[in-house]
Image (cartoon, rainbow, N blue to C red; front, side, top):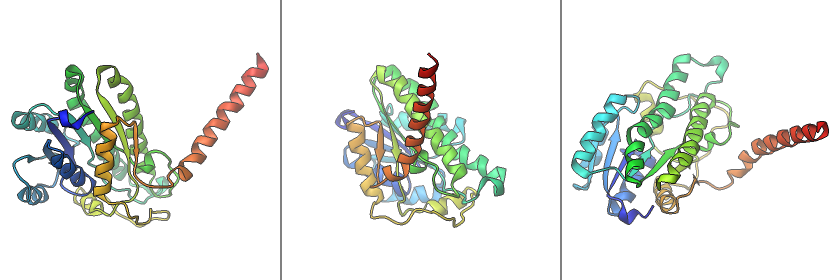
Length: 266
């Protein structure tokens, strides 16, 4: 999508971290931007430093009625949403499944997966009808491989985002609407603080990602470039394939074994 032809971007989790980086990059590109965030106080502080091209709406992405209200409010001021960035999420709980509180699992899935689906439910039909738009769904490296202990529930949700996004891309492509999957690695943000604010658990766990030199601002520029190139997947960190390859190698081997058995039986 040519962002010079886009008028309005809607970014969830947009008051901090990667979301805020995307908000600022979109605004510099000339788009009007609606920031949707659950933290009203933090949202107000962010808006105080930005002009009239950026507005905010308080939204818990689990709340489908809240999504409808947010859409009506945002589009009533800035017009139809051309770019939806489904970015809001919370951190892993660091628990193995055998030790996990089911309520923690439910919370992670509700925010990290269902919250993103709710954004699609809210905006996709309008984009399809106008044959214009782009959707970016934030997954994670954990949405490509579940190789790190302590992120089981998080990986379930992020794998779901990956599947949702790949399916949505196939559905929307005939209508001229782009869809991209954003798979960030570790970035220093206030994700842990935001997770605690919604009752989530933060716990150190083995295999947690180390710090990197990649910032929210770097990722924002990758996202804008990915939208304009209609990239199916935006990977933000180097050497991701090393952790992803064993999974795909195992899948390929399983398929080849089955093909060999079927060929022998033919």
